[in-house]
Length: 540
Image 1: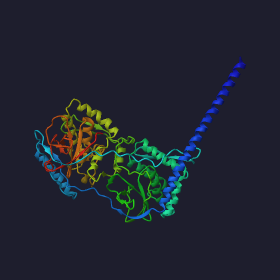
Image 2: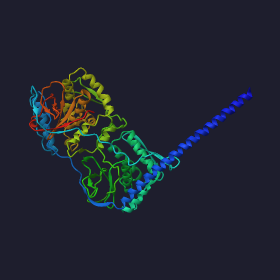
Image 3: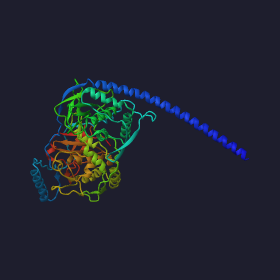
Image 4: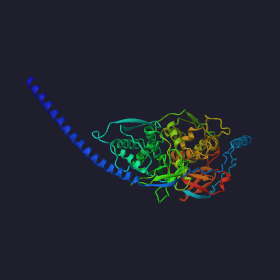
């Protein structure tokens, strides 16, 4: 019996050995195929890099840097406060006038409210802007694959924190470049380092993080900037060269520029960006502006490398997908409605989102600066905020008509007026002018209006547009008057008040979040007689 057991055990061991050998054969065969495929890919990658670096040797042209575009200044319109106590209302305006005078600002125009018309009065539409199309994110110049372990050099991961995200990037032992000078031949020679496998892995990991966390073009640029500044020194010539490599290989349209001392990267954008210096490139067709995004100044005479990549695409400032920044809880805030104390909600903002928005430069698309507000309004509120606010709001709005539901949201957004700007922990959404809070005009994303103590007309209109579209399911348009931004809602039931007729024949009734304590259909008298721009918004 014991002999049979020994024979059986030997047979089993023999089968196991055969199985392991077979698996090893299959694995070795798979690894061989993978290595051969990577070698083919790498050959195409190196050919593309060499073609580009050869073009770099003779593609530099002299251009001029252009000053940053500044946001247009507009005359301000005072908010309207609906109050029974006229003495209190007068004191608010007096306080505002003193505040503007103290800060050297021109006194805003004071508005009154037109009476609500019984059957609705059609206001003039001077211009209608359609919803902005969603732009595709640039794709890599070629397939970017992991370097097989058998052919890669030693790599170590470094972790870069991007608004709470841990982005792990492999940094090879030889991920080093050195520029002897900014002579075109020296720049091209330094680019030979990018043919090494460790740079392929670095690029692969950057693109993986872009995809995994749904990073916008702006957030991805910030990640690349963080990586190269860490490895090569902030704003060094080597950092700019590697940034240009990673950025262009990710599919973005960029150009290298220098002023004989500093190498920099400028990038093309679908949008016109405020506050960033730019230049024109693509000689002799110099119609496309290229922006210097790192905050430096281009100066006077600069030299631009017009070498191009075949699949390059301009970046976009849109934030259409929800980026997965880690939740960092800000202090709780309870926000009430002056007109309905029962309409009260407590929220906790994600500080990482607020920090990201602080880096975001304002921009517009299609040669129309009013589309800037459309982009803010078409950026969905982040999930953390929706999960806190929307279920509680839906419960309060349950059973109400469209008109009554919108009225409750309007009153909540209208909030109060902090004329002395002293209440930094308010119970209401408080009105204050950007120029007095920030020193310049600054539009808010919806999350920012619920985070900061003060906001102005455009911020209220943007947040209100989110709530009506998401919670009541109605179409909303932003309404622009010189110096003022409001909203209008396309109700599916009868409603009194001023309205605009859109090109599609639908009536959009004015709902102005800056008429504090006002009602649906109310319009400021100083803007009602002027043609308005109607900016149609997509549903989130």
